[in-house]
Image 1: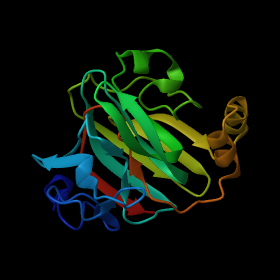
Image 2: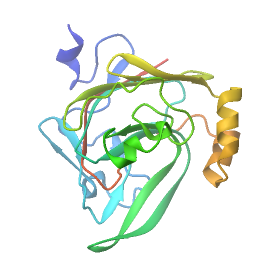
Image 3: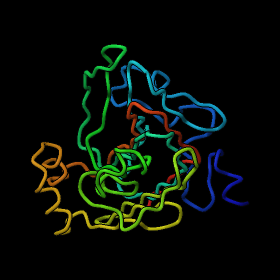
Image 4: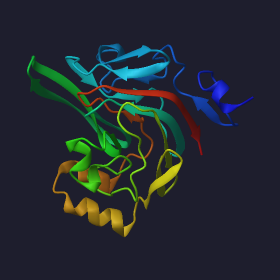
Length: 228
């Protein structure tokens, strides 16, 4: 049976691959604090997960299970100006009190590595190669810009092995790095923030995978994972 025919089933296209999103429920997902359900920040329609951009409690969407070595595949789309990412090797979570034109809102966020996904033509995506789609956000740039324009669907793939990581967009490997590589250690050392220190230590290796809520409208579908 073909992979595309199984994306919303319990199994996916090859032995060991499992569909995380069934197209209709949040059954394999939770919020970081679990004080609320995902539906306060996300909704499901037309077989996809979509963030509620103006939600008053904006929660990253965590997988219910934790993973250490995995091959995650997914489809993603950002609206014009939108920004999101896949967080992995999560070392902590935080609840921030933020403000917008409507007043205060809460943001449950994930502190870990981020596979950046963004409208590359927006200010957030174009200001630095470290913020382009496919980057290890704030630390390592992609070797090329492979994402489509905002409003179009892309494919993504995140591979985390014992000591190596790969970011893929639309069938292109746009970034590969070692978790203890000199390149990464130098990039982390340049950032004088607590999250970089946590990522240097990398005390947690088996964690949830998070789909980031970033105050904008983004969509995900066809999400599968294989433990490797």
